[in-house]
Figure 1 (cartoon, one colour):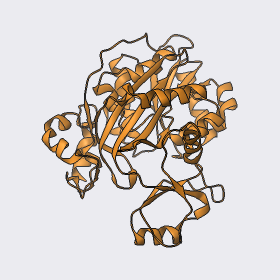
Figure 2 (figure 1 turned 90 degrees about the vertical axis):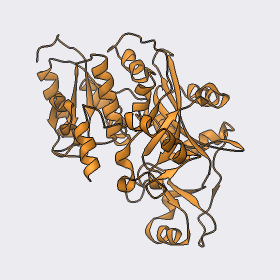
Figure 3 (figure 1 turned 180 degrees about the vertical axis):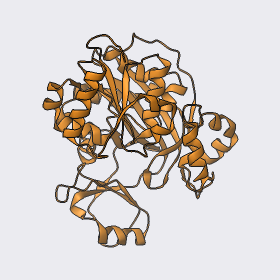
Figure 4 (figure 1 turned 135 degrees about the vertical axis):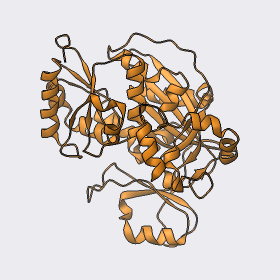
Length: 375
């Protein structure tokens, strides 16, 4: 490939948080940004089954993030593309933690790492640290309590740190609904690695930010209508307006006070007493396609910050997001996922609109869509 000397390239790690990766790739294509390439996670990476396969520079030998292998691959890419610097898209938590761990060495090797310092990042990403920060700022947070021997009420066990300080295992939050699940948790997991939070019922929202390098801020929000069991991926969502409410101003102030920059999503649960903070993720988030469907120019702000695009001004629209492949049993009922508010009836009443916005039912990813449909 011929390119100008020292042209910056964007590196996209594929294979994890894949729906966000696809949304970002669609933005690059839509904005006619060609100086990017993909590092696929393995031979079965779904990206190899899309129209973006021609942008895969290499398939990694190690699905885990191996520093020696990745430095070697990036060096090969710099030579191949005649590039001196590589912007790493902050697609996943594991990748971001890896970048922060080896930041000095990687930046000396020409990697551009669009993240805050390690301490600030962990303050947001670590469940207990962000809970502490929000509580200190007088924001509503779920109540915490000691782990009880006998089951008393539903709760959420959240890991205190990204990795267990004793075993190094990476735990996900665990929802405990009944006595059986409680007994399983007590007998399976090290209680000292977790904090126990009340399970807050209510409507589910994402408050979305991009804090730019030059003081520019993008804000948006979505209401989540359906989610996979155990608090996993969002199935269906619609645009919201809570980013125009005072709750957004409160979180915006919080992030400004700690000099945060980059992407961040705050998950909120709303009931009759207000908006409760559930967690925050300082990276790309799964249903990022909604940002494109709603014409938000969110990714564009990031690309502007790092010199890949001129400033974009667009009129935001209302829109929806849907991932049919995430439904258990491929059915749309209460056995397939968790619904919030009137989510089930709302989706059914507008099912054709949601089908049009099914994340993978597009020409670039139709083979993934068909594969999920047949499984």
